[in-house]
Amino acid sequence: MTGSKVAVITGGPHGIGRAIAERLAADGAAVVVGYAASSEAAREVVTSVSRASGSALAVRADVAAAGQVAALFDGAESKSSSPQPGS
Image (cartoon, rainbow, N blue to C red; front, side, top):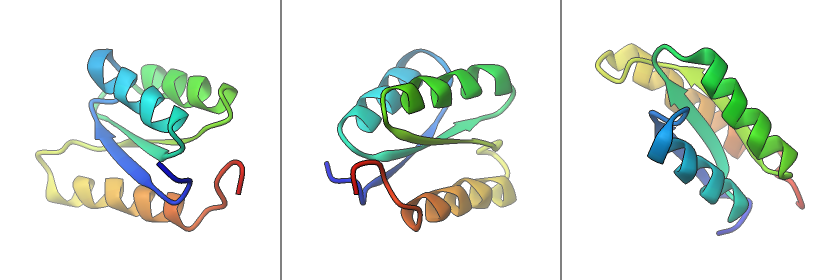
């Protein structure tokens, strides 16, 4: 992947979602970690990605609510317009 890729991961703070976020970030993607309730766990993923020189953003969103899903994509848009590590 290149630094211009942005991945939106719902359920990103735990288990498979976290592993996917960390892997995609390691492959060069900026990641948007979507979470519904666990802000602390989401911040941990962002910190882990940042320590590995990746780019991540945590966004609270309930994917059952259309307006909140829009916030996830707003986060992705902000990541795609931000400078990426190594750029």
